[in-house]
Length: 334
Length: 110
Ligand code: SF4
Ligand code: SF4
Image (cartoon, rainbow over the protein chains, first blue to last red):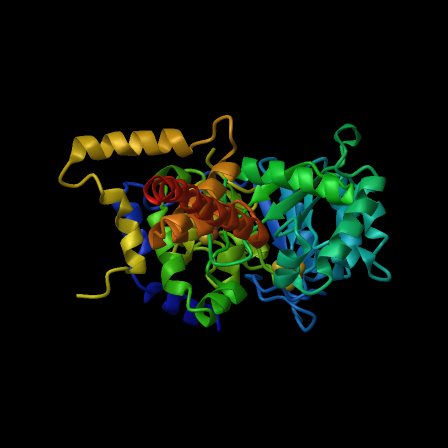
């Protein structure tokens, strides 16, 4: 399904009012950007896995990759005083041939550098070296681990992936990642392995911490819990399993006006593999670029105008404002 | 008119104060106080709630607390174990009441 078909499905489904109406009813719309604090780069669609919840529908056959030119331009943008975080995602960022070079350059900027790695790749031949590259550049590693039990995690990420993630965490731990004193940060991401919303982040973190330590002897710094947005492969799963109507009802039934004030698009600018600009990675996956009339590509980046842009919203946005709210940094409302 | 138990009816739970607001609100305060995190964790309470839901055969509560348990990362075997605890308790309660029957039998039989 392309972005247009996905949005058509979300607009036509069940018992939810259009997101814009719900926002207006709560006196919360339109959503406007406040600053460009996080520059999020999507390095491409290639991935060694093909997870069942992947919103960008990445996989081994993904053929989009950010070029060195676009990355160099992003480096210039990252120098902007306002940007404090460079957040790198994909696909599997490690499969982009320019990642190592980019991290070396970006590491010297003294900003927070995040790589969203699936960790499984770190055990594959030729990619183990990234553990050292990450440590050297003080990269914060963030990895999705849908569950602390192998069976549930494997259902989402593929058979055997859980054990490999644990092995990779063990290697990262040995290098100092996940240990308080080292300053090397390893955060994990929980997202539900099915058609339900995540529970309280704190309770899940406690559970993960205990189980991963007791069962596998591994440690991590923090757990982000993320709501699955009803797009991409997760949307296909919802349709296939006849869960879409109920899931959308759950999302809009849990609409939390306080979470609207904390949506990540207010402080993030997302860059696609070809340099196109988006309000977030989800809008990018749906093919919804920044509002018309705004500078749409890194080539004509204009922080003054982008900082005050109105965010492009649609019904998938219910996922960011349900319950405790959800962002790439986990829950947004305590 | 649809069936008696509709999935959508679960959402009506928040309206049960309708027609008797004061009592309803009092119930919600109590419900939240009882089920919120205390000396027992939310996790433990959710498993207890699931077991009670199954014993009381309430499809709404079974739906709500199965989902809650999933959200909290509780495993399927833990949920089933909680339901077995409820089932064993229910069986025990029934069997314990056989004492009444046995007492009466012993009193009345020659
Ligand atoms: S969710 Fe991440 S690891 Fe899984 S297929 Fe998508 S990009 Fe790859
Ligand atoms: S989906 Fe994107 S645009 Fe919509 S609320 Fe979430 S971050 Fe903002």
